[in-house]
Amino acid sequence: MKRFFHSKVWWINSVGIFLALSGCVTPDERNIFRSNGLELGCAVGDVTHHGAVVWLKTKGPREVKVLYTTDPEWKTPQETLLISTNAERDFTAQVSLENLTPHTRFLYRMLVPGKKLGPICEFVTAPLPNDPVPVTFVIGGDTRQNFRPFSIMEFMRSAKPDFFVYLGDTIYADKDKTAMTLPDYWAKYGENRRGFTQRLLGSTSLFVMWDDHEVENDFTKLHRRMPIGRQAFFDYWPIRHYAAEEPFRLYRSFRWGKGVEVFLLDCRQYRDPRAKTMLGVEQKQWFLQQLAASTATFKFIVSPVPFSDPRNDKWGEYAVERDEVLRKIQENKIPGVIFLAGDVHHAAVSHMPHDPSVREFIFGPLAAPMNYKISKLEPRFEYFHEASQNYGKITVHPDRPTPLVRVEWFDDSNTLLHRVDIENDQYFTSPAQ
Image (cartoon, rainbow, N blue to C red):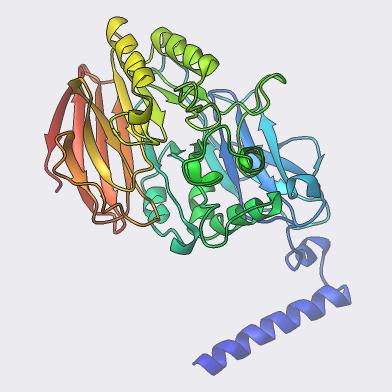
């Protein structure tokens, strides 16, 4: 059977090459044997109810455009203008799609002129801010390259999420041959973007934030390679750019219907141990103002490092600023605030300092070593799991008489580990089934 199979493959390939070279097929048929001129699949991020940012990478310098549609038959797709890729950004590019229809599934693919069309990928736009539709998203971080192929991402894809929140440590630049130059950092991203990562990113959108391993363990704004690692991060992820005076701004928020607003905090490039600040002046002011002004039923604060962790490099090292944030939330009586975090390589429900009624939900790692240095006996833990890689699935129901958030942890075999339901800022734990 194996001999027959190989013979059949050889015959198909031989006939295909002969037909393509002999001119006995149409241009469309010849296109089957061409490369699409692309690398590393699709990715789309920072989606709003009317826009999205598409990421792409070509094989060498190319002109390329994005085709997109809501029609599965692709009868009348829209297309962007041609853009050029170059070596300065490792032949990557971000393309903005605008004037999209809210709460709609879009198909998209890339086209390099003269090459085969790229693979079809998809995403859904956000609902309008007052639309009380259910939302499901997955969350996790920490993907070290020697743990590839990141098969847990296939389970995340099977959850059919509206979007994926990537919590940081998307590469480990300081492990398995330390990255020193910009091409070194690019190569790390290229390693991690193949296989199951491609499949997940091709099926949904993502909102990505960095943590320390995108540069080096526990780095702050003072690290000499921070600008290099930051440039590589922007080159390899679909991130919406802000005004020219903030070309490297990563902190941002996004709204997903009536039920959800997510605040992504940058806990690295403004972190200054001399000034005892994690966020820096501008980011902290923006965050506290936007959080207080949010009309979403639930406000998810995404911090790559945990607020509830008392150790160095976590919010415990910046306790004055941490307590200021927690106090402002309490003083302004902001309802529906939910804290999400990663980095520490264990899953947990952890009580906040000074107010144990407030919990933080910790996820991961997706694909990295587990943390065996932290004891599950620490009083702050209501739930603790350090036995397996894991991801989070969060479902929001703003359409119910009593709005509900369900937080679930799944391990690397997709077994449910733990579940917490939140109604009216009250937490209800149900056993894993």
